[in-house]
Image 1 (cartoon, rainbow, N blue to C red):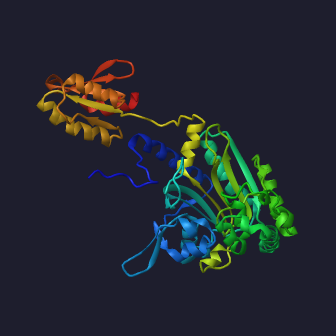
Image 2 (cartoon, helix red, strand yellow; image 1 turned 90 degrees about the vertical axis):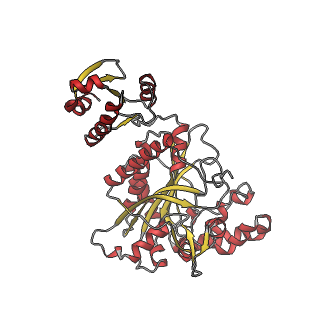
Image 3 (cartoon, one colour; image 1 turned 90 degrees about the horizontal axis):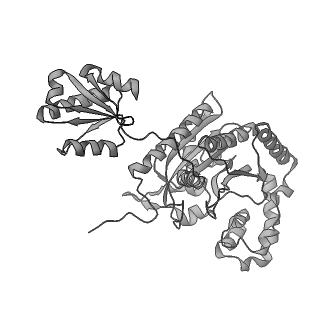
Amino acid sequence: MAFQIPRGTQDILPSEASRWQYVEKKAREICRLYRFQEIRTPIFEHTELFQRGVGESTDIVQKEMYTFSDRKGRSLTLRPEGTAAVVRAFVEKKMYADPNQPVKLFYIGPMFRYERPQSGRFRQFVQFGVEALGSDDPALDAEVISLAMAFYQSLGLKKLKLAINSLGDQESRAAHRAALVNHFKPRIGEFCSDCQKRLEQNPLRILDCKQDREHELMKSAPSIIDFLNDESKQYFDQVLKYLTELGIEYEIDPNLVRGLDYYNHTAFEIMSNAEGFGAITTLCGGGRYNGLVEEAGGPSTPGIGFALSIERLLAAIDAENIALPIEKGLDCYIVALGDRAKERSVSLLQEMRKAGISADKDYENKKMKAQLKQADRLQAKFVIIIGDEELEKGVANVKNMATGEQDAVAFERLAEYIKERK
């Protein structure tokens, strides 16, 4: 029987894995500059964490979670997003007592959602996200957005758009909620079954519906901006001022809502305007979620964060035709001729690697010409050629594959010679 990969998943082969390693390294470098530290949470959590943290009315909880029972009948779920698990760890490990506030965390890891696979969207995908917990300073909102923009820009992306909105505080959202119910209720029967449920659960989520996005009531729906109280307006204005101070351009989008129930105040998305990127342009989404820590059983603690898909990031890099500066090939390849030379090549490989030089050799008893071809295919910078004559003299012939130049080098100087010239 020939096995095939499950639908909505992918194999990342060595030729592509180097790009993943590069962007993940960039993410870690950016987070270090902003004092965000890595946290690693389990791949699965208790189902209730996501039901309460993500929100019962979301598509994620209602349709997309991979949920199963363990041998003792406990309901567990493969994590569909990163924030709820980070907040759970924050509460469980009492990180709110850390004297260094806010607590600034980042994660990189696989998430799982049962949704229709399409370009750049998978059922198993990798998210990079950050969470800053412990401060309601609007400057922190701007910093988190700045980090996301700096990350994309460090990878060479230029065709970016930041869309931002305010969802207001609880008072503002309650007023907006009532207005949305009054707006949609008379004609809710014209909407999909999901939206009909959302009318009472969370009418804001109707605005995020993909199926009914062209309905005329969507275009005339009350804007949250019109329902912001003075405190929420001041908060939003301060965030925008900080973004201007940072030189970050933005567009206010009053229809922007996030797909998770825990957001309030600042909500934002970063999109790609690159030609050919696709109909779904969102690269990154995030916002403020005051109240989520309490839902997880902790003290009142404000938070802000974002998450982005590495798969969609790589697609955006391709759309802008950006060649990542990834070092390819080996430092050296050892060509051994004869039994004695093959034996010596084993220890010589180890000497190169201990010196920090990437190296390999032939394991198929190929002729010299075939070994040289193999070195070329592996993009080796240097080839070390040894045979009986070289062993007698205590030197190896080293060929520079870029220039064709060849030198006789003593065995004890080989590592030094290659390090000087590579």
